[in-house]
Length: 426
Ligand SMILES: Cc1ncc(COP(=O)(O)O)c(C=O)c1O
Ligand SMILES: Nc1c(O)cccc1C(=O)C[C@H](N)C(=O)O
Image 1: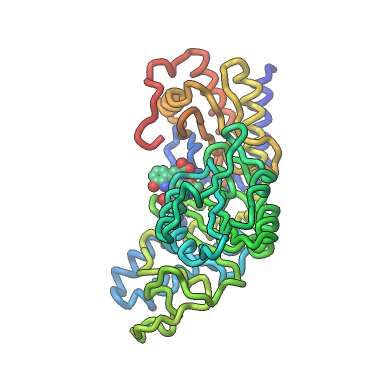
Image 2 (image 1 turned 90 degrees about the vertical axis):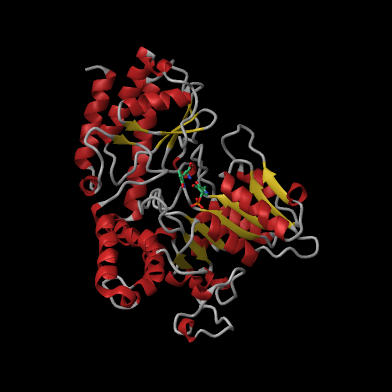
């Protein structure tokens, strides 16, 4: 048996032993498709579809009464989702609410927690974060009359892929008021040491926020115990809530009870909201950081999806995900040697998230060649192919197939018929 046949055998055995394998049947995907892009948009599950349809039924049968009656009362849905999400991030239920999007939630929490005072006027971030977060930071600085050129410090990266925690800590000066970092970097998949960074920042009196877009649903967190001040995330990636699915936010218990920077009537204590008083009485939970009416139809699928996470268990998901990415990297090294690929994510388990980051000079057109074969990766400029073997719906045999197709594309140079430029999204 040659090495690739041994690997196929190994994949079959791993699938046979996999206690999460049965969840794959719950997700919709074409028979021919190998979906490796769940880190950008997760797949629809039957349970998410069901809870979305339930909300439509509630609307159909209850009209306005759906806010409190119906099967999934809309007035309490954001809180219910917060409670269901709490175990995924190590939070108390009061600390979590589903609302908005990453960027709007970030604006809300910056408006609440970024309070430049005296010499403490700077925000510390990094050079590798997703652009939307940086845009939000710069616009919040401008709203305070502060020039981002001077007041936004972005930690550099030595290799253009990863960040060094000690370098971040060195930049935590006394003039820094707030630190914002991604938990997992969207390109390289590096997982930062949230606990260590939070502790170091607190020693300098710095408020700490994390963007969990690329870690929530992929790995466990202990936000309450680590005393992270706030966090934001989306639910359309690993949490499979659908395009434009509701975002989420965490505010540590120690900050609850304070008024939101951006107030609206949904910031209210729920029993007071319909008093319609012009003086806001904010909720004493993370619910206070909501603003307006929740987007029920973009929230409802998450109920069904989170039930899957309750059943599967985030520790089991992480365990499988690490084994899957390890298997994928091993196969890439074995089968794609000499084709010009570089594995750009850190190799240690505690330093990587849920996707493999492959660099190649021809990455954009290799992605197009993969898509021609019904394999869905994504491309991130300038040279990254992201491959996310999602624990809930990707099998080890799928991973084997993906790498073997990639090998064929490289051997036959079939990527050369495409332009080496990205499509609209990837
Ligand atoms: C790290 C990160 N932050 C922010 C965003 C954008 O968030 P949203 O469009 O949900 O506001 C994304 C992905 O779209 C992301 O990956
Ligand atoms: N949020 C997205 C969207 O609205 C359209 C297309 C893609 C996305 C994404 O989530 C991109 C993703 N955050 C990334 O890491 O590239």
